[in-house]
Image 1 (cartoon, rainbow, N blue to C red):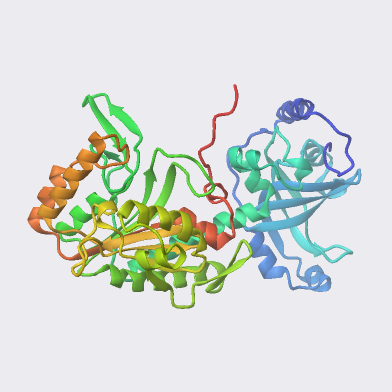
Image 2 (cartoon, one colour):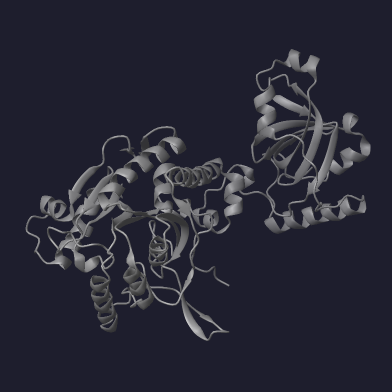
Length: 479
């Protein structure tokens, strides 16, 4: 049983690979498939621990509860004719005691060909060791899968960031924090879905390949459909398709969607990312501020256990009323000498204001010139009925009362086309069919997109978006 103790001699990865490959051949010679084809598992380790973890050794000795479990060997200590192994499955980890005189000579020889990282199944009664640890006495052991490569860093963890992102499977095997991060992310998605479903929203699916660039200001990824001989774009947002559905009578819709934007990579940006985008007929952006505050408070509580969430040394308070401030007011507070034109206002906001917005803050009234799909404010048409939610110095959500005036939308599309002609690579195309949909009639509607990845960062105390995306896009490895 090589590689099973902390003081095992240093060995190269290639030597370990060759040694394990030899064990796989030896298993096959004994009639044991090194890579099995399924095995019935009766008990989950976490459920075993929950059901019997509170029982004394004496009670277990009398009861002798029999269990049948399977998992990966994540640690092992060998004592010649006996060994302790730690098995982990999706629900938890437990120790098993393997003895030659219990298993029998042939089965113990098979066990002798196992390594940390292999998968085995164990059956037998529970007992407590002299140190009080809940343990399975292995009366039967079935070999399931041989791992040819060792677990990282002597199986105690994986600290190299590049390896963690490139080989996420190793990260998940080695790091409990990584597993917990993604459990929280998945819980976040479930909570958002449940919140919207309970309010009458319908989950839908819209195309991921678009004939036009629309829905947001971003550079697209381009592909080509051979049969149609047509260029297509991976969607940068599902917005115009979702609003077509509102026109068609689906008054509350949402899509948990993957978007693709051909932009740089940073701690806050991944070219492929996840959003929840939803639309509610007969609502305004102010209605969505109320809904968003309730949604994030509920999700934070369900995922983390409370509305006050620790993040990178700060406590983010989703329980208190969210601050509300117009973009102009926010800029004037930190840069009162900023010029009145839209470009200067937006630049000052991004550079001076955004980093200061730590607690949840709704920033409202964005200039019409940078909001081509939002409804103009009735009192001051230079601005739109729009908000962005900022937390921890970054945008988490974007929402507005939708522009349902087809004449106004035509004019704004035309300006986007002109901007693209002048070299703006993030400008939208003119979508004539969407104009036609507006002419059929879009009821007063408000819509919103919330970045799932960035929200997951906040609720898992993760400094980088790569920490909450299972397989983030990375620079190609050198050949």
